[in-house]
Image (cartoon, rainbow, N blue to C red; front, side, top):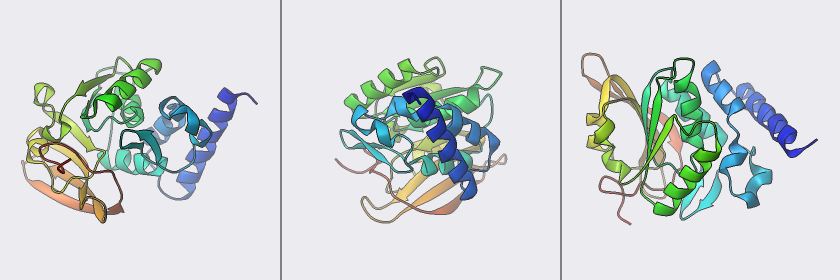
Length: 226
C-alpha cells in the first residue's frame, strides 16, 4: 500500500475510533476529518504520526492539535455551509482547513479568516494551505489575533486555538448575533476549560464550560505576556 492509500486508511480508522468514543457525531465534522489530509500539515519528521490522536509539535512554540480536540471544537462551533469564521492561531493551517471544508460546502460562500502572531507559523500555514484544496477559502493574516480581525467582522463563528487568561472582549464584540465563540480559558500552563460563548438573537451573552483541556498560551494584547 502506497503512502496515499495508507494515509486514507489511517484517516478512516481514526474517524471510526472517534465515532466509537462518542467524540464525533456531526456528519459535517466527520466528513471534514475524513477528507482533509492531515499529513499535509504535519512536519515531515512526524509524518508517520499524522493520524495518531495526539498533538504534534510544529516548531516555534506551536502544535497541531490532537484530532479529537479538533473534532470537539468543530462540533462545539456548530458549523454549517456559508458561515464566515475567524480562527485565532493558524498554527499549521490544519484546523482552518477542516473548518473551510465544512463552510464552503456547495454554496461556495463560506470563508475562514485565520490570524497568526508568530511570523514563522504564519508562513508555515500559508505554505501548507497553498498545497491544499482550501487556499481560496482561507485567508491567512499575520497579526495579533487576540484582538480579532475587525476588518472582516462580524463573524458567525470564532475559534481560538490557544488558551487565554480571560475571554477577549474584542472577540465577543466581533461575534454576530446569533454567533458562537469557542476558546480555551485558564492559566498559562495548568488548568484550562474549553469555553463556549454564545451571542443569542436577543444579544444576550451566555458562557458554557465544556470541560478541561490543554493548549499553548495565547499571545498578544488580550493573551499572556511573552
